[in-house]
Amino acid sequence: MIKLHSFLIFSCMSWAQAVMADVDLDTIPDDNPTQLTSILLLQSLKTANKQSQFYAPYVHELKNKYKVRTLFVESADLPMVDVQLTFNAGSARDEEIAPGLYGIANMAAKLIDEGTENYTANEIANAFESVGARFSAQAYRDMFIVKLRVLSDPQKLEPALAMMMELLKHASFEKSRISLVLSNTQVGQKQIQESPSRMMSVLFYRALYGKHAYAEPISGTQHSISKITPAQLRQFSDQFLVAQNLNIAITGQLSSKQAQQLSERIAGNLKQGEKAKPLAQPVDKSSFDIRHIKFNSTQAHVMMGQLGPSRFDPDRLALEVANQMFGGSGFNSILMKELRVKRGLSYGAYSSFSFSQAPGTFSFSYSTRQDQLLDSLKVAHQALVNFVQQPIDQKQLEETKAGMLRAFPNNYSSNANINAQLGSIGFYNQPADYLSHYPKLLEKITAQDVQNAIQKHLHPERLTIIVVNEKLDKIALEAVLKQDLNPQTPKNIPTIKQNPETIIAPVAEAVTDAPVSSPTDAPASI
Image 1 (tube, helix red, strand yellow):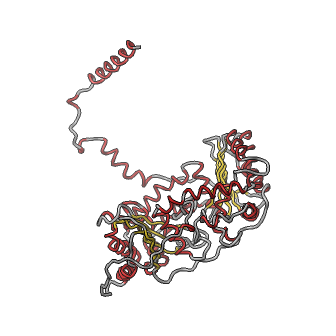
Image 2 (cartoon, rainbow, N blue to C red; image 1 turned 45 degrees about the horizontal axis):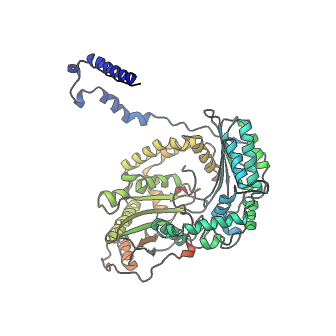
Image 3 (cartoon, rainbow, N blue to C red; image 1 turned 120 degrees about the vertical axis):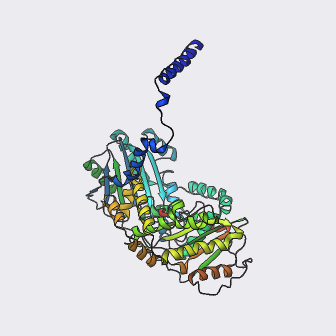
């Protein structure tokens, strides 16, 4: 073995020496960029993106005889099938079962594969594992999503599909399992109280939505989930996890005919039921709403925002572009430049829209030192005021659109990504060819489109502001914000002092999981 090892080393060295012997070192040019022929190749990369063409997958709109919308993409590369069932049954439906019953959709998602009338949790898990299938369920504010990934081989697909239908029709939601979830939430209480961002997000939604169905965390509260019963979970399933409250997405190695047959088997084996009723409209603010959570830290955590438009608003794409420009594109965004690059007031600042069935949210957040709090709030708020009032920078707009276009193929880079997009398109009733038209729609967005959209939908004069820190003077903060809106107003900002009206999040209202507070309170981004 030693002799062989030495021989290999000697052989490699001899080979390297032989190669070097063939190279005339005198012919290698100096490291002068003007003499490197490869520079021309590198320069050509600058125009590569302009020449790229984006080809979204072709989406079939299948004619489901049960009138359940079904979108399908054929993908022959892998012998896999992805199925997504998207029900209009998110946490916004919780109180339609009983007042104050927050968290029932999330509880149903957690327990749906924990046992049925015919199978135990272990038998269910073994049934999926034995055919290499992956099953999951997740509740969002708008949606209740069931996913199945399995090989397209009928001997694998059939038993996995049968077990998925068993869960949807016969989940037992046993009391012992509910108690286990409740016990797990109690373990997580300390973590929540130690997370400023999670407390801030919970209060933001409550302050913004009031009594609306979006106000409470998706996961519910310790108090609300303790009241959930197996009968209520079964009622939720019978009322909302039904065929007429569903859309189906399928991606994989199937023909259109096979996909249609699959969708009809799913729809036909579910209780037909009815569509969920439209959600109410939330009430918007008329002025600033400043809230404070006392938290012992040298850092102050800030979230500002307001109600935004719904998913169906015609300005949605223009607002997505606007968000990328303002705070969604890292160091190139206005918010990051103003707070971090120019002044070093924060490590990072980001903004986002959440588009949903009912009006969603626009928000931006960051953290800063306590002694820089008022300065940072003034800078961040002034950045928004200027963004709304001043003309859109044409160069930044073009760079932003180019970046969004380059990132667009990520939305269909895998079967799972494609299927998530199909589920979102189906749920929000977008045309089946939306992915194909997206680049053209994005290209058409002009500076005037963005300007009109932000002036219509963004309101710096009536933001909800959440601050998590040791102390806050609301009067001083409001004076700073009003000064941004009316620069001619004489400055008369009080000094910082302890705010006597501090709101401390009560333990009973804590949540088990961080509420979704981004665009993606939906599982797909387009």
